[in-house]
Length: 146
Image (tube, rainbow, N blue to C red):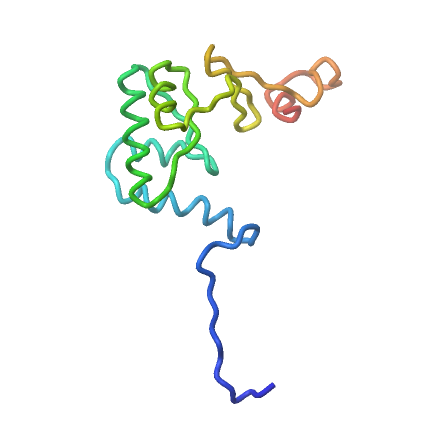
């Protein structure tokens, strides 16, 4: 080894999957992009993003379609593809189906919950039943079982 030699500098052109900083970068990158938008929809996306999922809702069918189209447009500006859509809205699913981004399973898993998008119900499937637990059933016990 020659301490007088010039350094060769290498850098990654993509993020190394599994590196210590990967979860932070996965979270920070879309948030940084959404910060450049002032629309209520972008704020909603940022506030309701969990790891790589956006979990949000709308009361009207037209709002669902607007959310779908606008959020895809916002993220497409920086080459992010929102690619798996689940909705209890029939028209929302139809729009996603046209773009081939619809979640085909009626039961969708997220955040340790199962959501039936056709019926709009959430189900917690615990590792063991509450009846088998010796503790009184509380919110803490239910969360520990999931």
